[in-house]
Every structure is written in structure tokens, then in C-alpha cells.
Image 1 (spheres, rainbow, N blue to C red):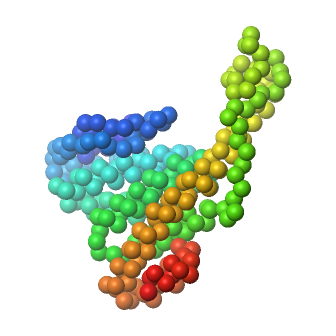
Image 2 (image 1 turned 180 degrees about the vertical axis):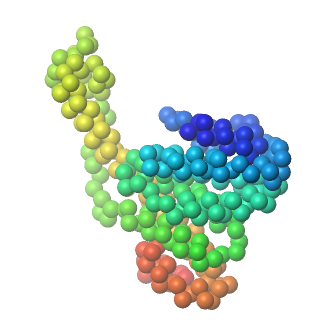
Length: 262
């Protein structure tokens, strides 16, 4: 992942003077400040396909890196577009493509995919004032994806701070205690059972975070973004209203939200 970020820097001629490293992961999360050095004008975008091909290659095995990398690249293109109009065209194309990709249903992966995807949606709407039906459909699909993932009346799962391993011989003089490293459990069967218990506990924690924090926050931010976009679209393109029902269904809008489109 770090290698991809470095290639974005070199191919687009961007110098990142300061950055924030996302804790626990080898990926840049945000900019503190950016100094742009566009080395060769529009030519700086000539080799962009090299980096996008590399990002595309990780989608199957590492969806989180896929969305984070395109989000990072989009933030760079947004800055480059201030002096290089060609970057704006590329930004729109990439944003539409990535937003059409659905996140995994795995809670841990969803947590790391949805926020970058939201930022990509926000970047798309703020950089292109001419609303169009295609992008409205893309935003509707994303909102529908988020709302479909929300489990109605979800009950918080029990999560342990530290999982207790099975009583088994260990390579430690201390003996068995909760939260211990599975590697010190000598018996392979007991170690595997402990690793499964840890994984299941982590999954319950991820599902809690997804249902109580991530999905509600994404829904809260994305809903007004979508409604505002569609209202603007309908105001300037009366023919787009013909597709209103399909947008409503795709986005899973409530009755009250539907009224806001009138």
C-alpha cells in the first residue's frame, strides 16, 4: 500500500510535506499540508494508468486498500486540478467507477471501505456543479447499499476485552491467562480453538461498531448529500424527474425523504 502511495507522489509530481499515518495500517489517512509541485503540466497525468492498474489489482484480496488508495488519489487529483484541468476529467471518471463498486459484507472490511467511499462521493459532488442523472443513480445506489447493511433493531453483541484461552500446556511460565498470545499455547488443537475464539470476538466487536457507529454516521452524512443533489438535478432537468421513482427505490428513501424531492 505504501508503495502505491509513493507512486502517486512521483507520477503526479506531488510533494507531501506532512501527513498522518493511519494507526496500525500502512496507509496515509489524511493530509496536514500539501505543497504541489507539478513537474510537467498535463504530462504529469500521462502515466496515471500505471498506478490505477496497480490499485485495481488489489480489489479482490484487499478491498479496504482499494477504496483508500482511490480516495487518496482523488484527493491528489482534486489539488492538481487547480492548475491542470485534465485532472478534473480523470477525477470524475475515477469517482464514478469507484462509487459503483460495492463494499464487502464483512464487517471489518466494510468499516474500512465505507468512509473512503463517502469521501469520494463528497468530492464528486463538490467538484462538479452540473448535476446529471448518471451520478444521481450512482449516489442512490451507494445510499441504498448503506441502508441495506443496517440491521433493524440490532442487538449489541457481547464482546470480551480479552478472550480466555482453553486450559492447555503452554510455553509460558505464567500459565494460562486471558488475552495471552496464542503462539505460547503448545497444543495445536487448543491454539486453533483459541484463535477462533479471538476472531469471533473481534467479529462481534466489528459488527457492533458497524451497526452503532459507522453505518449511522455514513447514512447521516450521505442522505442530505443525495437529496440535495437530486433536488438540484430536478430543478434544472425536468426530464430527469421521469427517473425519480427508480432513484427512490435504489436509495431506499422513506416517505418523508421522498417529499423532500418535490
